[in-house]
Length: 162
Image (cartoon, rainbow, N blue to C red; front, side, top):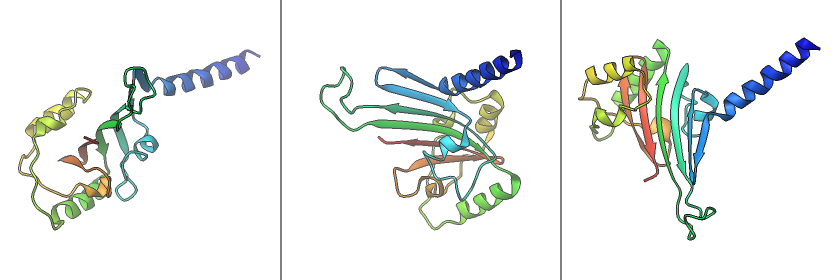
């Protein structure tokens, strides 16, 4: 009976921890997660599947269902993510990314200095090459476009609806 109780309690605790990934304040919900399947609902990772992810997704519900906004409007969302890849997948991604036929784009690396990143990632970002360019559509499809910043076997990604 003690073992059954322990198993029941641990299963309930795991569910409780998963639910704690998302916090809500008014019409704003924020999720911080390392769940690849949750990230796959936000961006396309089927072609270049990461070995590990961490992301922060903020959704601002402007549907008018809350008291603050009596008139509905379009909702907004913001995604910040780091995707880790094995060496072969990242090499293939980088080759296709830099050989894509497109206009060069240049982004400010400060846009990728997410507050929740580990210090070693922030240091790598600060030391990274600023002359990169590429086509981020591998992850964003035909929807709202985002931005990528390539590091060693990982990439930083941002996407927003505004």
